[in-house]
Length: 461
Image (cartoon, rainbow, N blue to C red):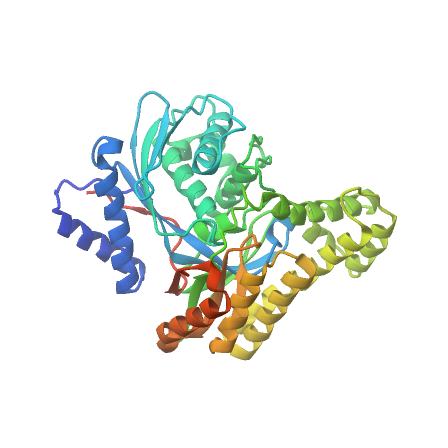
């Protein structure tokens, strides 16, 4: 949706009130609306001089919580997802020289990149993500002018499992696409006809893979999929969303019971999937690729993904287990692949049941599903560490009816479900219990949340 610029100049207090009213109009709680308005205002006040004036465009980009579906999305499986009412405020103005500049007003980082140049291998962190996004758009939409000054303010803790990196991808891509009017181009309309198609494309931007009709380029170094981008771009306020991937296929939104609340807490161990845990994250993804290759080497009809292969016929999983024994892959033993397959089958199968538990308000069912998911992540997927196991266990011991780690793994955060009226008390006791068990982790950030709105373009004054 495009917004016409208003001619009325608002004072700072009026601007925040105006934004708060806008977020409340989306359906956010007054507290969440007020905090989102304050974040956008911070980006504007601190970033105005960097972008050279008032913003031409602005957005709120949420993070996301993965309820169930650990490492299933990139394999063509299913996930249960929600956006969260924390994220990144993005403001932008056009430049004429094709250069893209970005200023993070909270950490002070300022970067400048030229999309006409390939991504240097030495780029890391925010710089690499911005370069990868701008370069891919430059190559996929020849002749576009992406020049823009962008300022961001984020209250998503980085490398915490809340998808701060994919939120950055979605926010920067939205700013550059608006600046270059890419949505008006024939190739955009032909290849990216919907918000779910856009989420799939942005996942391919991040991982560097080809997207139907739009060739790939260098990604950020991870072999992930479009799960994060789908929750960020297409989540629904107060609902959890069940999706299938490769391609992104919505399977239905379910209202979260009105008396339920998430409490989300960091383990205190950062897990940056593009840097600190990249090799371990990619090993899980490469195990799926090996399974997919083993299927396509023997099956009569090749499948688009591992998930598609296992859905293609009754007994497909058993057939693939037999084929694994005869396949050769110097990266994985037969036991490695059998274990990776079992995790995928188990976790993918839980997702519809979890959606049903939300629909029915069934605390016992979602509790059992989350415990099973957490145990399989530890024993089969192997992406848990003592801190995430202890944090999930402490949540249940403190009274949560369900809890699970989420994200890339090897660190990150845990979600807990609790009755909304008890969320604040529970959170304080939970964090105290965890801190006593893991005194070395230091301060533990946490917040309460219900599912928030997706990426939202905001009106400008």
